[in-house]
Image 1 (tube, rainbow, N blue to C red):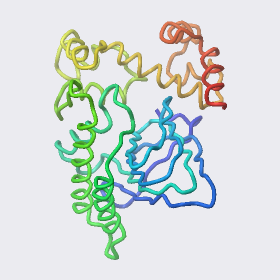
Image 2 (cartoon, rainbow, N blue to C red):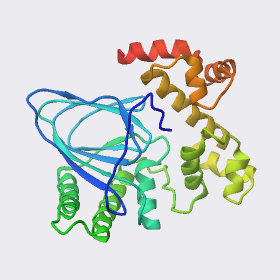
Image 3 (spheres, rainbow, N blue to C red):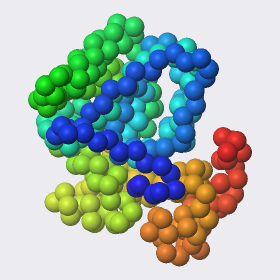
Image 4 (tube, rainbow, N blue to C red):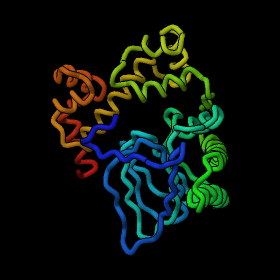
Length: 288
């Protein structure tokens, strides 16, 4: 979803797998970014400082040292203290991530119900900073970056971060393998939830029955496959109601729901509030 109502940033670059590194440096005053989203992944590593980071509808307190995750399509806003220091690495999935690296990426960004932030040790921050620095040096090489070198350093970083992530999760929350149907289903829903809302579509693409897919999804996530699809659609609705100056009718159309009355009914059934009531409530909460 890249609705123009919410600014969407893209990552350009000549290399096969566009990557960028930015350093979070102290400022003379606190810094609050504008609300936006990306078409790429972001890993934030905070060494010191404080503030909050709104990622979708969750406000995360910056408690250093820590790591924050922003997946493609997520809406976020960073409000940091002037003494905040850290690193951000941005990258796309195109151009060469191996199956194992995709699995590590999944463990970071697609673990259902897991928080978008978790603490790391000072030693882990140093290790991450060294790997991010290696990527940065390669990107700045006079002869131009070597894609395989960038991919290699990024792959090791993902491996390390995924291990730290797993260690921070409850022991009863299993990781999803690279070829796990539930993992593939979640990725497909992220891409296709506006166009396809029937479980049969996703089951057919995975060459399994709709009942079998729903059974596996429920065992892993505690929700049915249809509930996962519906929840993803409602998340997009909530994003737009909070951040976009669109009428309810325009939000309905942005979600590919042509009947606003139907959208009202579905949204109220899911949240207990009409879209107008939800917008009033959530904007009061975030003072928008």
